[in-house]
Length: 242
Image 1 (cartoon, rainbow, N blue to C red):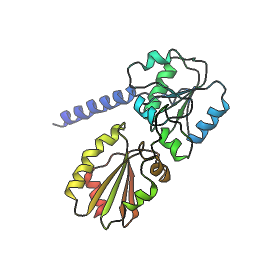
Image 2 (image 1 turned 90 degrees about the vertical axis):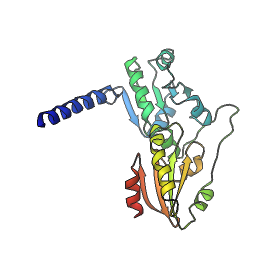
Image 3 (image 1 turned 135 degrees about the vertical axis):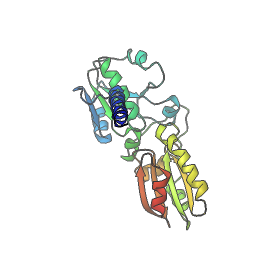
Image 4 (image 1 turned 60 degrees about the vertical axis):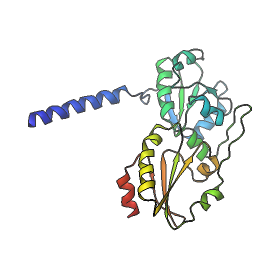
């Protein structure tokens, strides 16, 4: 029995190492820098030959994007072919929503021979949190969404209010949705769940300095009593409420 357990853990360890090794990780490449929003903006402004890549979907890009950015969807199936048309010798700046896709894109760029790649840490959420400017696509109206006053009004209840800052493009956000749905159904006598799309409500996201998603805030009587970034279990949220 013990031999079987040891074998199981050996297989699991080997699988884990292999899985992690397959993940794009350009950090050890000397031509790669993952920089803050402020540094990204400064380096971009100083560079006269910069290539700025938005590696999100076309829909995300249409909502808002950095000025003069070129949209090449990292998950679109033709990323490698499209970046082949760019100048590998020029400094290339890359960003996405929260920094995950841009890191993968940076790894592909470096493997393709690009000489200098700057990756926006925290993605467009960090850019927004820093109060930096956006552009919208041609003929696309600016979406202001909920105001901070509207947001605060929704917190005025004697129940707990669990706010989920998320986006439709966010894979971890999708994973946490069933947890929030169960909480909303099972605890409806004392809990309200409020989902806020950071793309559709940039004013609120910026006011609260949301720089990663999913991000949860638990309110009681209009005041934050707990916060959490990333995926979490229903049981852990219930512990906070108790």
